[in-house]
Image (tube, rainbow, N blue to C red; front, side):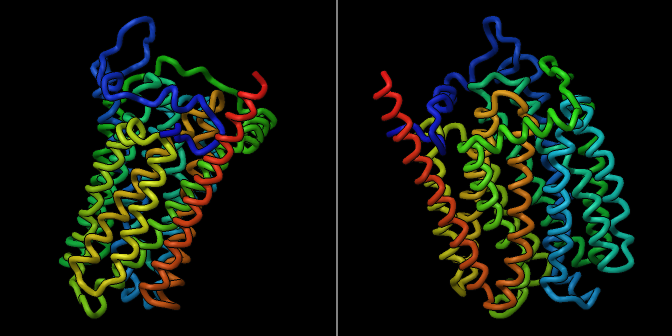
Length: 432
């Protein structure tokens, strides 16, 4: 099978992890961390907890949207802004926050981001209006912007290349656990004590994760401070945006997240309405399917080893498409099966695309990762808002149509990458 990066690069697959390499202890002169080596487990668990806190806070209101609509007397589209404001602010601030991490360090940046985000999380339950809630959620999203890009840059600098996809997969798995636990906990707590207590509980859990993260994460050993000069930052960003492969990866991340954001923003409305009419606690428990995302993200390295990056992206897109079509049924079991497939496909595709960005960028990795995260969360905001609009206009079928259109975009971009890779290979062969 041909190598499977999403563009005309033959270097990515040279560093694709093998099962044996990913599990081998650190040896030789490379002092970076690898499975079996000093600090790797602490690092993995610390970033796993950071991922848990990030997604639990970022999507803490998503499972509660029907309750927010009732409490504040707003529509699904208006309530969805409590999600879109957080993800949109994260997308807006992730690039400048990544620049700060280049100057002051990855660990410092991530610690500060979590500290501010969890503080705001403790204030969210006291929001007096939907406008105040949206504003607090925007501040929270802006604070969290310092974590995703810094985390992937930290891994790219501190972890051996052959273990990088596995390490990033574990971080993404933490995202899935945070997203799942946040929604499940808020669903059951809100059913008994209301949405304010529910989001407060998530805030307390995030505080515990933030403290453990800071205590466990090893100090960086391979970080070199960069410049905060706007001209240097602009040049780095321009170089990344001029890289066709990186741009394709950014678009793939955004499109996958458009599907995911749209589906999980309105699924609560669908399941609380006829013919399902499920109570809030049961609707919250639906998000246990995120555990599938934990598995598929963690397995991304093995998937790339077997299928290559483009093959893994095709599989992720096909799995997501199958899930969207199954979710149209009026059978709860079939809908749940569809959600499982959507979740598995999304997290696998996200892990492959984000790790490919870290491999591709040879300098300014924080900015490269920040651009990916920006595109990713723009996709989340677009999915949340457009998914709610589509649901209002055409019911669940409208949301599914939006998702299918986004997956078509992923497949089209990946096919274009395959064509570009073949053209690059032919040109190189002719030159020699």
